[in-house]
Length: 209
Ligand SMILES: N[C@@H](CCC(=O)N[C@@H](CS)C(=O)NCC(=O)O)C(=O)O
Image (tube, rainbow, N blue to C red; front, side, top):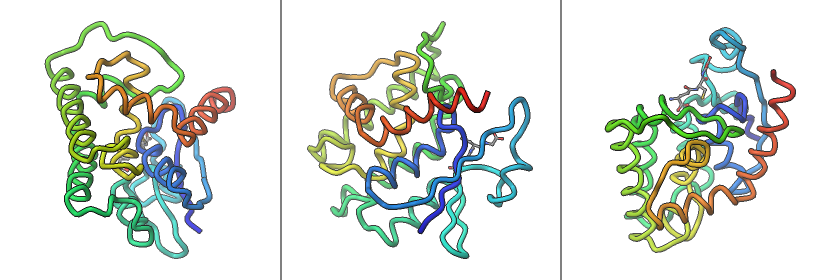
């Protein structure tokens, strides 16, 4: 069985991606949660199980896979449902997930994931607005083109998992999306796997700090 190393559910957006993917697809795994060290880098602590000193990290027997995108692709080798079956939808989903993985730096910096907080930004800079508009256009494209409830069709796939933390950021910071995109935000926030993550995130705040 896979072992997935993650950090604090309240804060670790990269941990959420493979975690919600495995949960939503009903793929069994052991969760190993290692809390961030408060006020300093967790590199040394995470180095004990992750070659980069970062989470998430997946262990499958004697195989170690680090980095969220590599983890999704590794799981996909055994579980085809990680990506949509249709070739066009799969190409779109992979591109969109890769775009999230390598981009949207302003959104990630300005709107850090913090599941339990509700606040408002003082200002939406042009850079942040550009990230929000690109994400909105991307979500609307997937939802329209593949005519499903999920970004690349009628099933939850890895592209939904990769944007799951953006839905949480939308909730925390009150980010505004188009009606069709907001529909996806509402659906993923209500997904049972997301509800489970959020329940643990709240409980963990009492343990970790
Ligand atoms: N590109 C990596 C990013 C991983 C990453 O930055 N993880 C953060 C947690 S969300 C981390 O481990 N930070 C260590 C620290 O804050 O000390 C991935 O996709 O997995």
